[in-house]
Image 1 (cartoon, rainbow, N blue to C red):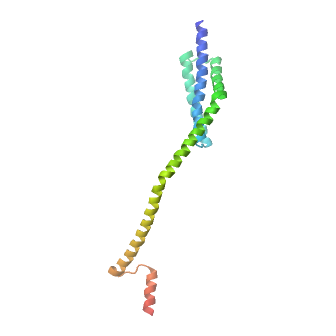
Image 2 (cartoon, rainbow, N blue to C red):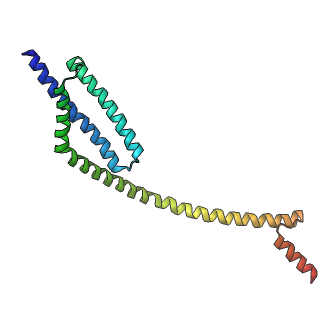
Length: 166
Protein backbone atom coordinates (compact mmCIF):
# COMPACT_ATOMS: atom_id res chain seq x y z
CA UNK A 1 0.00 0.00 0.00
CA UNK A 2 2.82 2.36 0.84
CA UNK A 3 4.43 1.71 -2.55
CA UNK A 4 1.22 2.73 -4.30
CA UNK A 5 1.06 5.87 -2.13
CA UNK A 6 4.66 6.76 -3.06
CA UNK A 7 3.97 6.21 -6.74
CA UNK A 8 0.82 8.34 -6.68
CA UNK A 9 2.74 11.04 -4.82
CA UNK A 10 5.54 10.88 -7.42
CA UNK A 11 2.98 11.13 -10.22
CA UNK A 12 1.30 14.17 -8.64
CA UNK A 13 4.65 15.82 -7.97
CA UNK A 14 5.58 15.14 -11.61
CA UNK A 15 2.37 16.77 -12.82
CA UNK A 16 3.02 19.78 -10.55
CA UNK A 17 6.61 19.95 -11.81
CA UNK A 18 5.40 19.99 -15.41
CA UNK A 19 2.96 22.79 -14.62
CA UNK A 20 5.64 24.72 -12.74
CA UNK A 21 8.23 24.38 -15.49
CA UNK A 22 5.83 25.54 -18.18
CA UNK A 23 4.67 28.40 -15.94
CA UNK A 24 8.30 29.53 -15.65
CA UNK A 25 8.74 29.12 -19.40
CA UNK A 26 5.75 31.44 -19.86
CA UNK A 27 7.77 34.22 -18.25
CA UNK A 28 10.35 33.68 -20.96
CA UNK A 29 7.59 33.80 -23.58
CA UNK A 30 6.22 37.02 -22.07
CA UNK A 31 9.71 38.54 -22.12
CA UNK A 32 10.03 37.60 -25.78
CA UNK A 33 6.59 39.05 -26.51
CA UNK A 34 7.64 42.39 -25.06
CA UNK A 35 11.24 42.61 -26.30
CA UNK A 36 12.21 41.33 -29.74
CA UNK A 37 14.82 38.54 -29.75
CA UNK A 38 17.10 37.24 -32.46
CA UNK A 39 17.05 33.55 -33.30
CA UNK A 40 20.36 33.05 -31.53
CA UNK A 41 19.07 34.64 -28.33
CA UNK A 42 15.93 32.51 -28.46
CA UNK A 43 18.05 29.40 -28.99
CA UNK A 44 20.37 30.24 -26.08
CA UNK A 45 17.50 31.12 -23.75
CA UNK A 46 15.70 27.87 -24.60
CA UNK A 47 18.87 25.84 -24.29
CA UNK A 48 19.72 27.13 -20.83
CA UNK A 49 16.10 27.01 -19.66
CA UNK A 50 15.66 23.36 -20.63
CA UNK A 51 19.11 22.50 -19.31
CA UNK A 52 18.06 23.98 -15.95
CA UNK A 53 14.70 22.24 -16.23
CA UNK A 54 16.42 18.90 -16.71
CA UNK A 55 18.41 19.57 -13.56
CA UNK A 56 15.23 20.44 -11.63
CA UNK A 57 13.52 17.28 -12.88
CA UNK A 58 16.54 15.24 -11.87
CA UNK A 59 16.43 16.76 -8.37
CA UNK A 60 12.72 16.05 -8.12
CA UNK A 61 13.23 12.43 -9.16
CA UNK A 62 16.19 12.07 -6.84
CA UNK A 63 14.23 13.44 -3.88
CA UNK A 64 10.97 11.57 -4.46
CA UNK A 65 12.12 8.36 -6.17
CA UNK A 66 15.83 7.97 -5.34
CA UNK A 67 16.77 9.10 -8.84
CA UNK A 68 14.95 6.27 -10.61
CA UNK A 69 13.22 7.38 -13.78
CA UNK A 70 9.74 5.92 -14.06
CA UNK A 71 7.67 6.18 -17.21
CA UNK A 72 4.66 7.42 -15.25
CA UNK A 73 6.74 10.29 -13.81
CA UNK A 74 7.75 11.33 -17.35
CA UNK A 75 4.11 10.98 -18.37
CA UNK A 76 3.08 13.10 -15.35
CA UNK A 77 5.50 15.88 -16.31
CA UNK A 78 4.24 15.82 -19.91
CA UNK A 79 0.61 15.73 -18.73
CA UNK A 80 1.17 18.69 -16.42
CA UNK A 81 2.82 20.69 -19.21
CA UNK A 82 0.10 19.81 -21.69
CA UNK A 83 -2.72 20.60 -19.26
CA UNK A 84 -1.20 23.95 -18.35
CA UNK A 85 -0.50 24.80 -22.00
CA UNK A 86 -4.04 23.95 -23.10
CA UNK A 87 -5.53 25.75 -20.11
CA UNK A 88 -4.32 29.09 -18.74
CA UNK A 89 -0.95 29.39 -20.49
CA UNK A 90 -1.88 31.14 -23.75
CA UNK A 91 -4.32 33.67 -22.23
CA UNK A 92 -1.81 34.38 -19.43
CA UNK A 93 1.04 35.04 -21.88
CA UNK A 94 -1.10 37.21 -24.17
CA UNK A 95 -2.54 39.25 -21.30
CA UNK A 96 0.77 39.80 -19.55
CA UNK A 97 2.53 40.71 -22.82
CA UNK A 98 -0.15 43.30 -23.61
CA UNK A 99 -0.02 44.73 -20.09
CA UNK A 100 3.76 45.02 -20.14
CA UNK A 101 3.79 46.59 -23.63
CA UNK A 102 1.19 49.11 -22.43
CA UNK A 103 3.28 49.90 -19.34
CA UNK A 104 6.39 50.37 -21.49
CA UNK A 105 4.48 52.71 -23.85
CA UNK A 106 3.28 54.77 -20.88
CA UNK A 107 6.81 54.99 -19.48
CA UNK A 108 8.10 56.12 -22.90
CA UNK A 109 5.41 58.80 -23.08
CA UNK A 110 6.29 60.05 -19.60
CA UNK A 111 10.00 60.11 -20.45
CA UNK A 112 9.27 61.99 -23.68
CA UNK A 113 7.34 64.61 -21.71
CA UNK A 114 10.11 64.87 -19.13
CA UNK A 115 12.73 65.26 -21.87
CA UNK A 116 11.06 68.26 -23.54
CA UNK A 117 12.41 70.92 -21.15
CA UNK A 118 15.90 69.45 -21.36
CA UNK A 119 15.76 69.39 -25.16
CA UNK A 120 14.63 73.02 -25.17
CA UNK A 121 17.45 73.99 -22.82
CA UNK A 122 19.91 72.01 -24.93
CA UNK A 123 18.82 73.86 -28.12
CA UNK A 124 19.32 77.20 -26.38
CA UNK A 125 22.72 76.11 -25.07
CA UNK A 126 23.79 75.00 -28.55
CA UNK A 127 22.82 78.39 -30.00
CA UNK A 128 24.65 80.22 -27.23
CA UNK A 129 27.73 78.05 -27.76
CA UNK A 130 27.64 78.72 -31.52
CA UNK A 131 27.40 82.47 -30.94
CA UNK A 132 30.23 82.31 -28.41
CA UNK A 133 32.41 80.39 -30.86
CA UNK A 134 31.75 82.99 -33.57
CA UNK A 135 32.47 85.83 -31.17
CA UNK A 136 35.64 84.12 -29.98
CA UNK A 137 36.80 83.65 -33.57
CA UNK A 138 36.16 87.33 -34.36
CA UNK A 139 37.91 88.42 -31.18
CA UNK A 140 40.91 86.22 -32.00
CA UNK A 141 41.14 87.69 -35.48
CA UNK A 142 40.94 91.24 -34.14
CA UNK A 143 43.49 90.48 -31.44
CA UNK A 144 45.91 89.01 -33.95
CA UNK A 145 45.49 92.01 -36.23
CA UNK A 146 45.91 94.69 -33.61
CA UNK A 147 48.39 93.20 -31.20
CA UNK A 148 50.37 90.76 -33.28
CA UNK A 149 49.98 92.36 -36.70
CA UNK A 150 48.99 89.01 -38.20
CA UNK A 151 46.63 88.33 -41.03
CA UNK A 152 44.57 85.28 -40.29
CA UNK A 153 42.83 84.38 -43.47
CA UNK A 154 43.52 84.39 -47.17
CA UNK A 155 40.38 86.44 -47.60
CA UNK A 156 41.86 89.20 -45.48
CA UNK A 157 45.14 89.02 -47.38
CA UNK A 158 43.28 89.46 -50.68
CA UNK A 159 41.45 92.47 -49.27
CA UNK A 160 44.76 93.98 -48.17
CA UNK A 161 46.31 93.35 -51.58
CA UNK A 162 43.33 94.96 -53.29
CA UNK A 163 43.62 98.03 -51.04
CA UNK A 164 47.31 98.35 -51.81
CA UNK A 165 46.72 98.14 -55.56
CA UNK A 166 44.19 100.93 -55.61
